[in-house]
Image 1 (cartoon, rainbow, N blue to C red):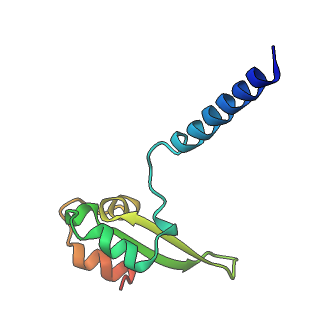
Image 2 (cartoon, helix red, strand yellow):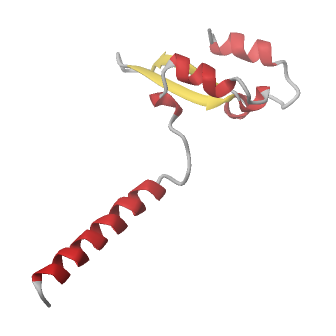
Length: 97
C-alpha cells in the first residue's frame, strides 16, 4: 500500500468517526444549552404540550444551581399530574417565567 492510499484510508476512517458522533445523540436536542431567546424562538410554533420550559433549582445538599429543561408534557409526567390538568397551574408550580 502506498502512502497516498494510507492517507485516503485514514481520511475515510476519520469521516466515519465524525459522522458516527453526529448521529450518536439519537436526534435528541439538549435544551439546557439553549439560551432564553433560542428557547423562545424554538417554542413559537410548537403546540402547548410540546413547548420547552426550563427551571433552575438547587439540588438538596448542593450549592450548584442546575438548569433542567423539559417539554410541558414531560414536566407533567415528572410531577405525576394528569394530562388534562391546567397548564398555567403547572407553570406556576414550576415557577417558570
